[in-house]
Length: 227
Picture (cartoon, rainbow, N blue to C red):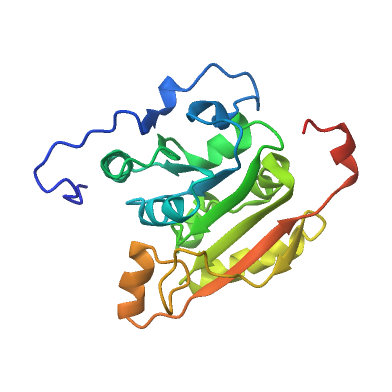
């Protein structure tokens, strides 16, 4: 299925788009995406399911001392967002064409991510597809692993059942994360929760939004983990 995002022009991902096959060599959970950026010594934030890259473009402009890696499975959205980052000369934004769940669970190194953003991820509404939702028991464990000690996860959705799923998993993994109210990012517009394309579309439709922040807690295993 094509969304017609290119509007007939050639999308250029050079300098801002990375295919999963072009990632540096990694063994187990050893890949440090900070090395992919021009500056590797600044905080790193990940967005899972970055879509057209609206949040990344907006927030990277206000938070220039932070690197943003957007992970998008749809090739068309990935290419559009990477081309958008190139056109806007966002040196602190990269797009990765990969499965976000696999990246977090099996590739990403331990204790390196400051913030994880999950905004309007696919709700997979049919019960038989719930296993495809990003938030699962194993990804909760993996997100805790890759986050820095003071790291956090921001979750926003318009989908009531997915919100109940988030709340259930947050409660189930209370030893890993503390739940807090969500504060909109600095790039969000007046009355916006985040300011993504999906949010603006859903806002026009009158849909309610749900949001929370989960902050990483220390557990006993941390003293043996790499920092």
